[in-house]
Length: 617
Image 1 (spheres, rainbow, N blue to C red):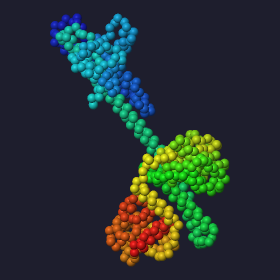
Image 2 (tube, one colour; image 1 turned 90 degrees about the horizontal axis):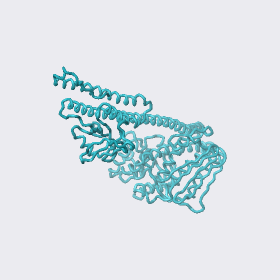
Image 3 (tube, rainbow, N blue to C red; image 1 turned 90 degrees about the vertical axis):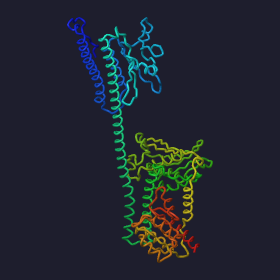
Image 4 (cartoon, one colour; image 1 turned 120 degrees about the horizontal axis):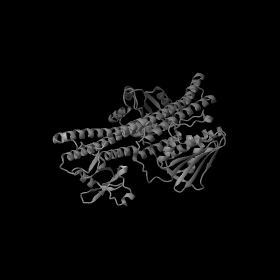
């Protein structure tokens, strides 16, 4: 900006017409004002443009850009207005004070200058005190508001469109020769306009800079979101590929060996056929385990996994775990080792989930170990119990260790490329440990093996209380286990099976018929009502998903009919999510069993309710 110009005093023709002098002075002042503001606007636009052009990567705008805008405003006003000192005071966060932070280098008052004989520039405040214009001088906001109301103003708020003040423009005037002189009045007016509009230009530039920063943050968030979507998509594809392989492999065995049995004619006495059936059963259990892993992870992520807190004998549980993997270890020529504390260890946990965690780790150890041994070590450290599963296997590269506990991720290893696995085991183990108030850590070295440690607190019962629903479920499970023998009945009873799937119906019919029951099959609601007119079943087995009606609606209708309301109803259904059992019980069923059905458990439930029906009769 250029300093404010004035007309030459040595102009006799002009002096003869004072009004013409005043008009020309106003015109020249207005032109100078617009030219000065345009120059300032161009500087500010250059800063904004530099942010848009030079930022190839999205990031937070550097604080230096904000400082440059403030300092440019100060310098340009100082250069344009003779006899005026311009500084900016920054608002101090969460206080009622500001601090002078921006002033022209030529106006900067150092400690050396303060010690000299030249007095610092100052502004009179409301209290009568003087504000010294020097770097880092602290000013009360009330004083700035007072200076803003003076005539001419000595302070201008730099604020956005919403009234948020970012700083204050402070002006120190040198007194003019005559306040009544018309030309002097023009100068005062033009200076005030320049300062006011310059402060507004600065505020607009700051708002635009904030908008740019907000857009960059949004763009960065969108970029990160897209990257996360891409990563999730890759994980999903990897999971689908792994799951497809896991499902197809046992299905191939089930379909293939079933085909052989059908082609050869089933002979119960044939050892080969018994082997075929054993493979079919094992493959089916593997499919069920895969589905359960997926459901467990979904329940955990939805915070819906039920935990049954019990006192667990750690020694007994660990021995049972190793017994389950003994055959697999022997098939690979590996030694199994168990290291326990001398004294008995008791921990409050869910025994089923604790066993699941240890089995996941041991199966992984066996999977990645081709020679040597796999072990389980249990140590008590204060109020914590450390379960460490170690192996002498291939080890895990350091760059992959951070991904170990991510769902659906599998670490590439050429030595075990043919082994089964979905990448869910470690993710489930960590989440289950966290639900128990614990954690999992890993130590691994290439070609020397790995060790995974589950750290759990010894006692948690005081922090978790079983709900009534949880207690009922626990009693139901223990009741099911007490009937695991599947005893044959000494009397015959009618069982009404309402099941739309033909294969499941034949399976249940064959099993219950073998136990001595007379099974009546109905494949829809109409057939069920017809069957009830012709028989008095001791128990009704009800599928929930039927082609013509919801099975729960049928249960409610039966409970409302005085002729059938006392018949025990067992729901046999694929509904296996949290709350499904409670939903079925609320509809009026007496018992609930999820598919795939454990036939001995079903047989014992039927036996239990048939005996209850007989007692009622």
